[in-house]
Length: 291
Figure 1 (cartoon, rainbow, N blue to C red):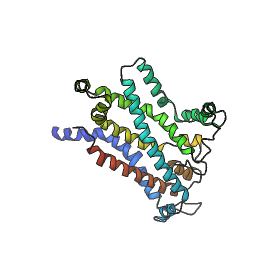
Figure 2: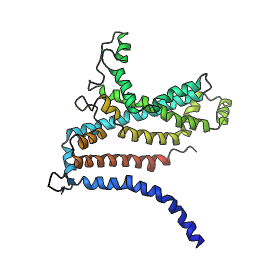
Figure 3: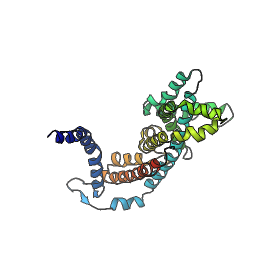
């Protein structure tokens, strides 16, 4: 009897988390998939099963392809830059320099700001003529530029904002990993005459790979789920140049009230994230541990 209670205890402890996970993650995902197979009910007309009709419609939807392309560009641009910048900041504030505590605070400060506030700050930076960027560039003879109104620079401007916001947060994880490293490694490398770059490339960077995987997973998730700055800065414009997939889902669901098609778009996003998760956990996780 006592043995049965001992075996049952872990499942009882897992029950609250399991209930929440099923109620707020798995059940909504299943219902989203089911809803994507039906046509939206209107008035007295009930919902009608249409199978893959919404998915076929995506093939001929230019906005979907534009948003998917922008999401990929956004992820490929923000993730490596945020990881590289956060690692560099962590190395700087981990070194023996004066005022490093103050520097850590300045690096981390953008993280604690709400995304809406960050977007409004950068909206002032990007404003033509009297924005901070144009004011600075005018000192060197450059003409004013509508950074958020130009299709060639709108998406890139959003990427800069996201990198500035996230790099300080990821820096904390790298800083913790650097402080966990055995200092005798650096001492032994110095005795062998190894330079700083060689030590970073052969020792520090490989030991940071587990942290890099964790940061990369969070950065990729953030790149596909952040739409606050899109709403504030560009609203997907101009001409869908800055429309990312999640913002398009938001527009279809809450602006056009086509929740069935939005459910189909959501399933595409979930499949993309699931594929990336498989690559990260199924392939990369086996190759990152330094031996």
